[in-house]
Image (tube, rainbow, N blue to C red; front, side):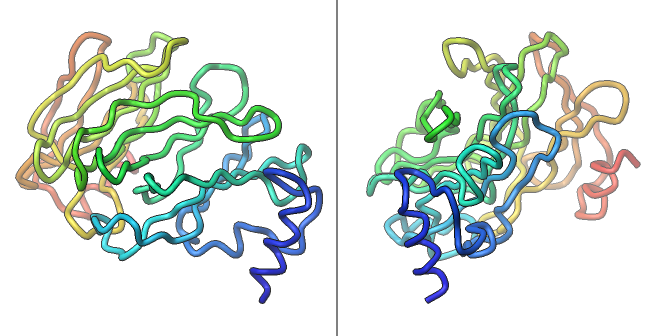
Length: 260
């Protein structure tokens, strides 16, 4: 009943509401997906997934459903409810959580997610808030067939040129290819790749590693494709290079991400 009442309040205005009975993020079926960025000066300070859907039977993250709705919180703009984007019946969000990053340098976060087509598999999708609604700003190509996924590593200016890159492992259980896309005015452009790495095991609700900044530039922390070694990868604008950090373990990943 509390959810129904809150959703009724959210329907006061198209896309969002001026006032809410309850914080929508507190009602989500995916509480671990709620992310926040209090430092941004723009409208998008929080994002999360909701509305479990069973139309895509992949289960790569160990669950029987995937989110069908992306919410963003826009304090001072549209009220505490924020704005919801509901996918059509041919897609789901096949992801652990949205990622907030200012890709285009305008001072407002974009929202980066893994979106999956029921017929063409996963892609990285970028959504922007236009002051009223969420709109699709750009996306990578779909992998090309259903039940094929990619696992984001992170978002950063990897080579120090001022442009933001998005790194992800394409099919971390099959192809095991790191791909790096750069955000440009025309959208996402693939600028580099490297084979033989992974960051996810089938059924795991989390993605291992990420991007760390330990004072000498961003490094992508991933595993070797057979999970035997922990790797730190760099992108210099032309190619991906790496170094071995030792045997892979969850403790080693945590230490690497903490710059230890």
